[in-house]
Length: 448
Image (cartoon, rainbow, N blue to C red; front, side):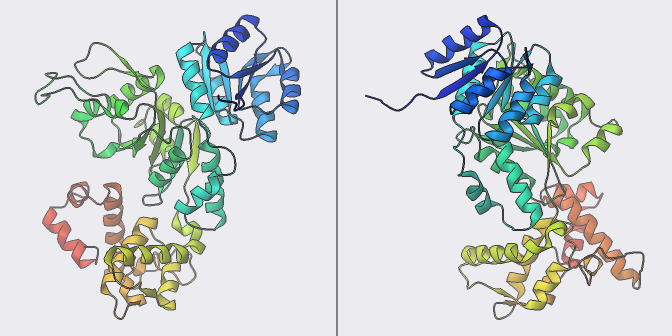
């Protein structure tokens, strides 16, 4: 006999019919319900009882659901709150998500969607276990990283779309994975997609799937990325690279929570949480009319900025030690040590490629060094990005034109490599270079 206590749900709505519908539906899910007709009753119940979820209407006789969300955020931040809003009140729903709501429902309430939301909210990890798990994966004790971990902890407990901004190589995909892994969708798929790497003519098929015979080469039915991520998270990396025609179709899929495969006649309902990232300034892309404003508002409900390595120089030593330990394990060789001058050189380098560039620099130095000691010269750092005090080098003071041009060339090539996930052929095309010329330049700059 199962004697474990039933989970408790707080329902806040001034309409008796809505309260009754919710009570009956949740009761059939073996959940214990408590009802309040207004903000005051809800706050009184919250003082007396411990709840596992709160469902609240937006409009209450003595206040708003947003006020209740804020009240709970201050007193019980790990209690998920779902907002019930009038149909079409997207702005209200977005404001609720920004205030800290877990998710939202629209009236009239669809019971399958209600059950799905409740089940998802009740799968959230209990308070106290998140920070340790995030710390193991996201290294660094600097204030920017401590703040980033706190934000990941909070956002993992929400279903809000998150726009992850930051420079190439700063760890945006790792942040997206942590948000997924620490939330209620952790047991479901995490599907990352590089939007800039899909040919435009194949985008619709890749995102939404296709039916056999729908175009030349479609020899069998194939599900798309949305279907693959059903129940989990779809991470749209470099979302700014989507062509405008695809942005329209993506917006509709997000709004309708359904997709239609190429050649298909019916739509398929999909349940995915959308996380996206780009190293570009998405707001500037909107201003330049290269990115749809309506899609921007749907994706950028909450922005999470990942700091560059320049902003957290105090973490460089810990990161370097971690990378060297991993390289030793991977190669089966004794762990290399950093000479103090090499460590100082790393701390004074600008790292335009951020953490990914640090890993590449150390991997190369690990191979080149003598006697398992990495000297400063083994790092082969570009002088144009080195400073004496950790500040940005003043490139207007050019003493040696050759060195200056080489530093600019290195920076552009690294940027192209980062944008193409180190696909040399794609990077060469982006820079209008032949592959042979690209290979020569990589070797000359010590990047091969």
